[in-house]
Picture 1 (cartoon, rainbow, N blue to C red):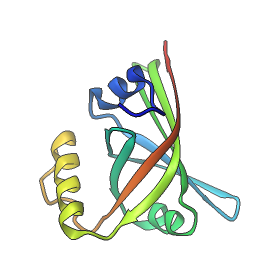
Picture 2: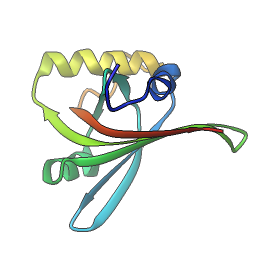
Picture 3: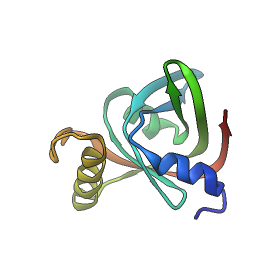
Length: 129
């Protein structure tokens, strides 16, 4: 368990394959985009490319929000603030990509052009409705 992430928020983040929404910002221009992720011990792992990756390279401070809803009615939400790090390790990127793809039902080597990013969670908040 992470000291920054309450037990219940960890349980929610690990509970099922929901999309997360990563927020990045460069030059006061916020960018929010959905993505797949996995969580363990205070670290979010994801693979990404494009604007998200470019923004992380310039400003590693990010936020990730995950919400579960049923027919539009929210059941719970978790919001994390943290610092992203781009990991240049081909074997580690492959391992994480395969784990995330398995979680979300994709082919093991799908999205092989993406780059590995790990987010060290600084603060977390959650609400169960």
